[in-house]
Image (cartoon, rainbow, N blue to C red; front, top):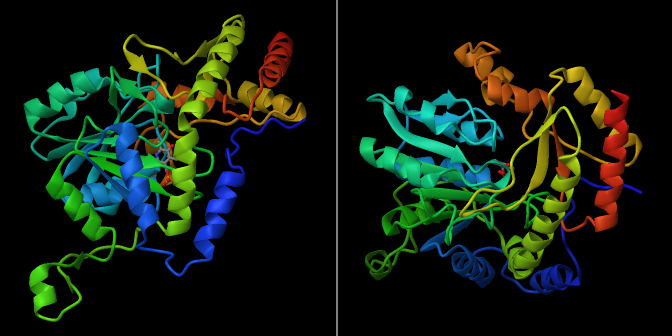
Length: 379
Ligand SMILES: *Cc1c(COP(=O)(O)O)cnc(C)c1O
């Protein structure tokens, strides 16, 4: 038996939708991308949703649309996927890293204010593994200093504070539909924004900077180009898969929550590990995975545990193997010391992430728990 870390939840519905698209002439710029965007607005209650080729592309376009660029600083968490920081580098701005806290793995909001100066343009946060960052406190801070807020929501579809979906608190939210995320379009992403001007700019720069309007048409022109845009569109095949996936999203989220609760219960009986918390009053978690830190603080133990799990057919993972400032590109560029982000370092080096996706049955989780307990009795 193999327990995969992530497995796309795809069936006949996606397959026949794709087949239908492939029999028609329109493969990009079609109605499926608009339908997917509308349905995404329905789910998140975002005013605008703009489909893109990936979450990373969405973050990149987000900074461009906000006018963040050379000379600007963006405050960002040290514990995330490297894309969160790369998007800041793409526009020539400088990432200012902040360590995470160890309850949930989210950015340590208490450390932000001391890093704000006249070059600071924005704060970028990640809803770590799907647990929302405290956006209400953050919003107070960003309002006080007039900073933009960017939310990396790659693992946070279904995450809410009260009834408000993440990605609708800040100026820009960016979601991912990479195969192992909650829902997939193979590759793909979605930007959310509540601002009409930003939405229009995003639509333009995701497709070369095309400008189309009545005046141009009256002059007999198809379009003009007034911005250095990219080709970051989502195609019709990806969008039609996304539409089918959204139909299953509530089932997926329920199953993840149930699996997560069951796995956490079992793990709580094991000594010498610290499980990143899965609940907070008024906050809805999307339960991407369950991550725990081995308190023996030795990379050897982690390697041993992951290898033993793999021998039993259990594929675990690490979210994320940074900290980002310790990855070569950032370490060499900004000369960070290895011990500058101790909490993020602990997660990167001593934590293990276990799956809770809808591909796991209760029996699978019981099996995982039994094997993990066995391994921890050995070390
Ligand atoms: C996966 C991930 C990304 C990258 O998403 P893509 O759609 O592959 O670009 C960005 N940020 C976080 C937090 C992620 O987990």
